[in-house]
Amino acid sequence: MNTQVTIIFVTYHSESRIVKYINKLGKNFKVIIVENSKNFNLKKKLKKFSNVKVIINKKNNGFGSAANLALKQIKTKYALHLDVDTNITNKSIFNLINAANRIKNFGIITAKINKFNYKEEYFLKKNYLKNYNQMKFVDGCCLLFNMRQMKSVGFFDKNFFLYFEETDLLQRCLKHNRKIFMIDTIKISHIGRSASDKKYNSLIEINRNWHYMWSKFYFHKKHDNYFYAFIKIFKHIISAFFKVIYFNLTDNKTKKLIYEARLSGCINSMMLKKSWYRPKIN
Image (tube, rainbow, N blue to C red; front, side, top):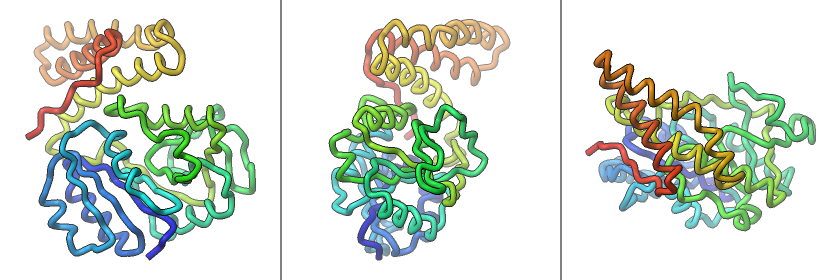
């Protein structure tokens, strides 16, 4: 078993997917799973893996808070956060560790995501080393943390329940001069929006829309100012308002609830209220 890295997962109603993932990883790595849906059955199913620790969170405070809970317990040199809906081989994980040992002076390293649109503004310096790109922004589905360097950054802002928590962390890395690298030769896949069981799709979609709008305003208020944050979400407020009316008139209850959630997320964040909305799943 590798002694340099601990892999962390945050799960929420994703038992079947995470069990398959752990079976694929085997006993090659230490793993910490923080389960946000109080699924005690998951702990029983993974009991046979002595390298896996499952923490059943007492309260679902979102991704960032759960990830921080896992990160506080890590004693290895590196921590690797993986979304449950990523597809990465054990070989690629070992390659990430080798890349980390080669660079040494970094905060975060990630792999290249298949079919992801890497815009020019995401790069600080292409080929900082051969196939090692220094980045401003990367997708948060696969993040290898240099634990020593990241402690001064502070990991995730617990005020985010969902969305923008990784973008916020990347911004703080840059402000603390912690380098972010993406390795061209290490490839992974990210399905996206499929970490939870499909039967909860409609409830989780409403939850996503509420938190996307709340987090977008909060992020820009935190890193810019209140007025700039308002400008960034103004078009979403207008769009959501008219779509609530439209879908009410056309009796499309699902769409109406989604845009009501978007509008509510905007308003609550503007009123400086905490990110309180939670999906109503038993």
